[in-house]
Length: 243
Image 1 (cartoon, rainbow, N blue to C red):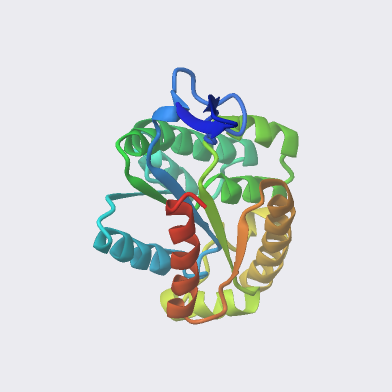
Image 2 (cartoon, one colour):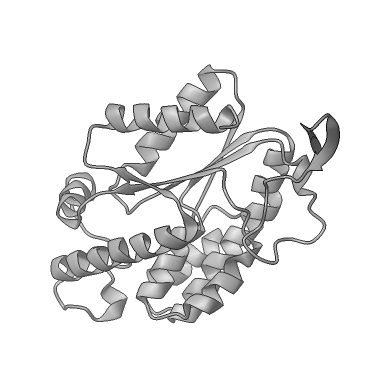
C-alpha cells in the first residue's frame, strides 16, 4: 500500500486500481505494478500498426511488454473462429464467446503480467465487445454487469476513422469486406458495402456514447501513423510518470 504525507502525518493512500464491477476474486490490486494500455478502433483504423510501434518504443526504453487482443485465448479462440465461419451464431452466444475469451486472457495473461511489472498492450478491450453487442440490441445494463470483471486500464485510446476511409483501407488490404465487421448478420442491407457503411457509422456513434461513461481518449486516426504514434507516446509517457 502506498502512503502519502498529510500535515506531517503519514496516512494510507488507496490504490487507484479498480475493477469496473465485481472483478475477479482474490486479486490484490495493489500488487499490479505494471500498466494496462488499450487501443480501440475498427478494422482498418491502424490499431495493429500503432501497437507494433508502441512495442518497439517501449521495449527500446527498457520496458517489458505483453500483447493481448480479441480471439487470442487458448481456451476458446479456435472454437470461436470456427463458430463464426458458419455465420449462424446468435447475438447472445457470440457475446458470451467473446466474454469468455476476454475473461481467460484477463485471468491468465493480463493480471499475471501486470503483477510482474509488464506493460500490457491490448489490441481492443471490452469497449469494442460492448459496442458490438449494443449495436446488436443487447441490454447495456446486462453488458456492464458481464464485463464488471474487467480491470480498468491505465489508458484507453480509440482511433477514430471515418467509415469512408475504413472501407478504402479494408479493400486495399484484403480486397474484400468481412461479414461480421460489415454487420451483415443485422440485415441492414443485402449489399455488403452499404451494410458496412451503416454498421460502422453506428459503431462510431456507440463508441462516442461509451466514451461519455468510460472516459477514454478519442484520437484522430485520419493522420499519418507517425503523427498518431507521437501523440500516443506523449500520453503514455505521462501515464508511466504517474501523471
